[in-house]
Image 1 (cartoon, one colour):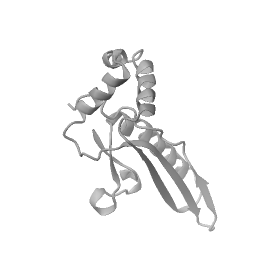
Image 2 (tube, rainbow, N blue to C red):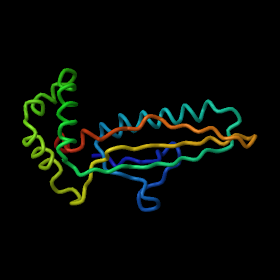
Image 3 (cartoon, rainbow, N blue to C red):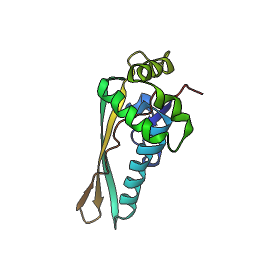
Length: 153
């Protein structure tokens, strides 16, 4: 499990105690969808001529860890991933209840109120030296489908 920065280090995001900027997420989510959004934001900022500053608004949607809808989404993702990575084979063979039980077992001992990140949405506004502003919204991250799928190493 990763402690994922909502506002990345590269954008001077601080840690949890100062600004509640960290969320519990799987490494796959942190290094996948979160990183992609950060890269899109960085590319947008770098292409702005005469950038003076930028603002970033981050909103997170949370969901209970194992809702039936989330388990269906996870099963679909696992079915696709098994073609690329054999570590998903055992998960792919599980029914929904067994998958939910495996996730709960893998996350046992973590914070009792652990929630699954259902989506992170960024709204970035570049402020140019002439006073004009340019808005940008990268694609939402979608849910952290990997949280709890594998035993912590």
